[in-house]
Length: 152
Ligand code: ZN
Image (spheres, protein in one colour):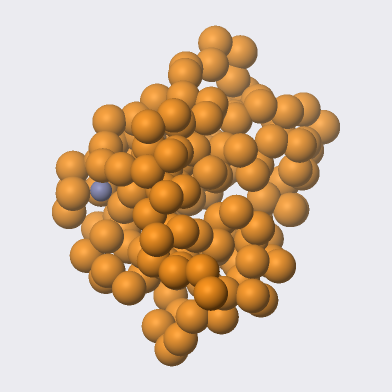
């Protein structure tokens, strides 16, 4: 038996220590800023979209381990997806974070892949907004909203 809590922690710590795609993007086609006042997490998300497809995704952030890991895992998952797929991923992720009943790790893993580890954060309600911040920022970037999104 794998200790899920340990697995969550390992992946989150790894992505916090070595975040993927953590850089600004000069040729981004859209970007958005996000702020989670509850924790103080800030992040700017960059996307390069061509013909409805996300060619590149990156972020620059200043936040806690969970928000950094979430942004790292999210950008990794977004690259190569089209807009509809990205929106579906957002919906699946949002559902997983809001599902407080029990942990359906197997079915989540099927839908979310590596992102399923972030669903473990829902056991710590105070940190859920840290994990969802990059995703709300993604929504804003896809709509090309210029203002800073807040999780509040
Ligand atoms: Zn945070």
